[in-house]
Length: 446
Image (cartoon, helix red, strand yellow):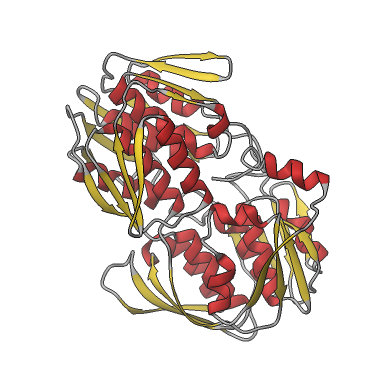
C-alpha cells in the first residue's frame, strides 16, 4: 500500500495546469449509453474512478478506448443491462448509468451503492424522479431493477433534506432527454458539473433549458448523436492547489482555472488574506490565475452549501489552511454533517480543533508538526497532504490510494512546484490496512 512522505516548510512556486473534472467526467461517460454513436471525451486523466467507470461501461457493452488526453466510448451491445455489484461497489457514481440505460435500453439493473465514510447517502431521489417519468422500480437482491417501454415527461421535484442531488439531477436529466414530451425538474442541482453534462447533451441533440438554475425544462427527442467534448476543469482540484499555494505562503500560477465556479471559495480566500488574481483568459471557466497570500492569515467563518455556496468537497482543505491563520475560524458542514474524518488526524499534527455536531471551531495561530496520519477518504487525504506541506518536520500520510481517485499524481504536481513529496510503498502492510484497501470503494467519496 502506497504512502506519502512529506518534508514540510517548503514554499511553493511555479505554474501548473488544472486537470479535467472527475465529478463531471463520470456522468459524461455514462451518457454514452444514450446513443450508439461514438462519444469522445477529452481532458480526462487516468484516475482510479475513471478507470472503474470504464470497466463498468465495458461490462455494459460499451467499447472503451484510451485516446489522446481522454477516452473514446461507443455503445455496441444494448442487451447488457446489469451493472454488477463487484464494479458498482468501487464508487458511488456508478449509479449515474441508471437513467441513461433505462431511457435508451428500456431496462436497467444497477446494484445499490453502499454507504461512505461520512454517512449514509440514499438514492431515493433518483428513483422517485425516474418513477415520475413512468419507470417501474423494484428492489431485489440488492439490485435496483428499472423498466419502461418509453419514459414520459412530467414534473419532478428533486429537493432533499440537504438540498438538491447532483447525481440525481444528472440521472433524471439524462433519462428525460429521450422521454416523450416535456419534463420539468424543480430543485435541480446547479453545480457546474451538471451544466457541463447539459451542454454536452444539447450538443448531441437534446433540448435542455435552464442548466445552472434550480429549474430545468427538457423537451424529449427521439435520438441523440455522437459528440467530441472537452470536460470542464476540476474546481475542487483547482481549489486544492490554490490552498497549497496559500498554506505555504507561495506564489503559484494556475492555468485552466475555473474561476466562475469558485466564487464562494475565492470570497473566503479574500477574507483570509489569499489573493487569487486573474492574469489572462476570456473564458471565466478556463482562465489563468496567480495565487499568493499575506504572511499573516486571518480567520473566517465557513458554511458548506449547494452550489453556488461553499463546496463541501473543499471543506477539509480549507480547515487545514485556517489551522495556520491567526484567530478562531468556524466551519459548519451542512451537506454531510459527519464529514469530519480528518479532524482527529489534523489534531495529531498539533491543530487545535473543537467539534460540536456539524461545526468545528479552529483555534489558529499555532504550528503544525509533522506526524504519521491516516487518510480516510478523498478530500480528507488532500487536507492531510496540505497540512504536511506547512508542517515542521516530516509527515507520513498513509492510505493515499484515496487520493488517486481524484488527483492525478498529486505528488508529481506538488514536486513540480518545489514541494518534497515522496510516494513509497509499504513492504508489509498491516492487516487492517489490507482490509481497508479491499473495501475502499464502500468508504470512498464521489
